[in-house]
Image (cartoon, rainbow, N blue to C red; front, side):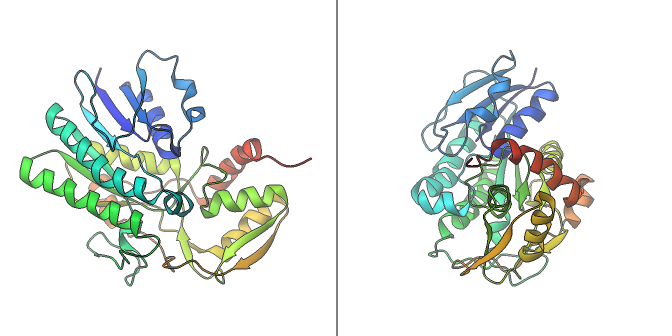
Amino acid sequence: MKRVLITGAAGFLGSHLCDRFIKEGYHVIGMDNLLTGSLDNIEHLFPLENFEFYYHDVSKFVHVPGELDYILHFASPASPIDYLKMPIQTLKVGSLGTHNLLGLAKAKGARILVASTSEVYGDPLVHPQTEDYWGNVNPIGPRGVYDEAKRFQEAITMAYHNFHGLETRIIRIFNTYGPRMRTDDGRVLPAFFSQAIRGEGLTIFGDGSQTRSFCYVDDLVEGIYRLLMSDHHLPVNIGNPDEITIGDFAEEIIKLVGKGEVTYRPLPEDDPKRRRPDITKAKAVLGWEPQVDRSEGIKRTFEYFKKVVKVDA
C-alpha cells in the first residue's frame, strides 16, 4: 500500500484530498496544527486502518516514520480574513513549512505537490491568466503575506527540482468551493450563503463588477490527482474559466436561498478586479477540465451550509 502525507489535512481542501486518496487505496497520513482546520472534517476517517493523523505545525521540523511515496502540501491559511489575522504564520508555512517538506521529500525519495494559488498573479493586468504570466503583486500590501509566501513556495520548489532532481509538482488553484468550507472564513461564497440563510444583507465589497471564477471541489481534487500522477513539473492552473461578476453571483445565491438583499462596502486594498484561469495547459497535459457547472455545484454546497449555519431563533 502506497503512503501519502497530506498537510492541511483537516482543512477544506485537505480533507477532500484525504477522502480521495483513501478511496484510491492509499495509506493516508494527515497532518495539521488545526490553526484554521477542524477535526470535524476528517473524523469519519479515524476508524480506518489506512488513515493516521499527526497534530503538527509543518513550520517546525517534520518527521514521518517509514516510507513515503507522495507528499501534498496544503497547509496554509487561505482566506484574507485568516492571513490578515495570522500574517507571520502564513509567511512561515509557505516558506519554512515548504522547506521542511521538500527536505522530507528528498530524504524519503517522495514526489511532492505543493498548493500554490491564483494569488501569485495578484491584481492581474493580463486576462485570463496563463501560467507564463508573472503577476502584478504588491509585496508590502495587506495581501502580500499570502501572495509572496506562495511565490516563494514556487521558487524553492523549483530550486529543489532543478538542483536536487526532486520530483515536484506545482498547482495554481483558483477560487474553489464546496462542502466543508468554514462559514466564517471570509471568502465570498461562504459569506454570501451564511448571510442569506440568516436573512442578513449580502455584503458586496466595491460595486460588484469585479469577477471570480468558481471551481467545485470535486473537479479540483480530480485535477490535483491527475497533476500528481503526471510527469509535468511546471505550474498548472486548475480552476473553472466560467467567469461571473460578484454582483451577479450574489443574485444567484439570493435566488437559490430564497431570501436576502445586497449591501455595499468599500473594496479592500489590492483586491483583484478580475480572476479567470486559462486552463489550456491543464486540458493538454492532464486531459482535465471542470465537469460540475456552477448551478449544480452551489446547490450541493447550499445543502451543506443549511446544516452548519446557525440561525438565531
